[in-house]
Image (cartoon, rainbow, N blue to C red; front, side):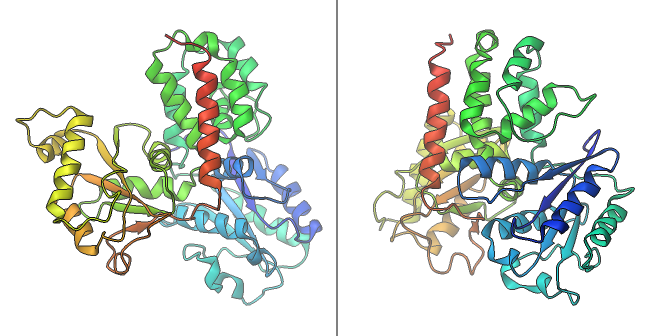
Length: 408
């Protein structure tokens, strides 16, 4: 159960909506005691800065207002936000308040591209007057208490553990480098909002912040510093994937996901964001590097060989027995090719039931029947063009600044 001192309310909207409506909503939420408004008024474009910020808010909010209009449904980021908010409400324990502009019959919620099955029409506000819309939102938020564990909670908890002994003067210096993200509320323990801000900052600001922590890093083990870097670098991963991957990793069968990516490091960032602890990650990008005509058993042998080497499993111990005993999840990144078939996927899942395969499909795609037969789960929203390279470059820049500290 999350323990939040304030209710954080995210407002999803198109910046081209009636400004009087947006202003009324913002003013009303800001005026509510114990409530923090998370709302962006800028036109969003694909890229590091907006993705990190919006994903932070989507993963940190306790409730959301979704302002919908015909105009909003033409904006990819509104659809992106609606999909993630809808996913968070699968269990009905997350409050979403749809505001339907010029849509008294609720047709907007039925739009196919919205893909929002868990956004309830019961909660929808269909009024047109800005003051009436704002009043309706306040009425629905009044008395609401958050009970859902937030997607960012696991990563924040991990950062808090690493930075537990951080001196206050270093925390203050590093905090000054982070201009963005969640408001710093009076009475909060300063390390908590710092951890959240760090996850939502553009990479340049995150680098400036971690540079301020150099003296503290020298007292930490290198592994802890690397974990912190990974968590910051993975902050662009969307909260829907963060919620889905643990469920897939814990599933009894069909442990396979796919993303339109080409780099094993991209798959690892998804794993880091979703499962920051108790995880083994093995990169096997060469397993399917060439069209494979041999029996699927040959692929299994190669995967088991790599797992044995990476996980240091003795020759006299069965790989599957060891994986079943270990209290860890194992992810294997792999690139499928034209020789990769539905039968191979099924065979891998049967022979390696403790392994979650992460297929990188940017260049090769998946077998035609894999999705229809639910052999693989597509991770969406998909990456935009050139984003993968940009995120990888940001990670390398962050690492370069850490390596420059010459930590022992």
